Image 1 (cartoon, rainbow, N blue to C red):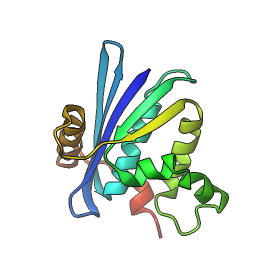
Image 2 (cartoon, rainbow, N blue to C red):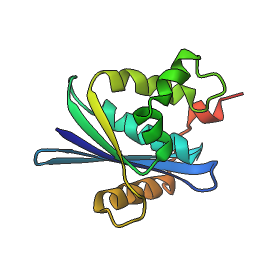
Image 3 (cartoon, one colour):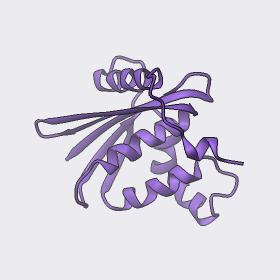
Image 4 (spheres, rainbow, N blue to C red):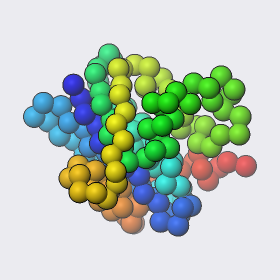
Length: 150
């Protein structure tokens, strides 16, 4: 069983943002984070999950993802994403990220668990710290999916 904790942050929404991800497997722990100069909170929440899944080697893993994002958790656990996909994501935001997410999701056996943000969960708090610190980094990347949209 692999456990992934995720969080996203954006100052201004849109504004500078970042994600924080923690992967746990047996005695191993890996932290990932990155900041972007112009993005949204929901994009960073979803990107945190994507980056965690991208870091997994192989396929077919049992994965539990903990997120404080109802946007991400409900989209997957309530199966909204499959309806969005069937309709070509018409009228939906963050299509570029959902299209990255879907094949990653399909490679593994993933459950999402919602956790209340800023409520004392140490790993969720650490992901928040990683995301906020990344968003304040002097080396912010361009979120092409956000800045390049028409």
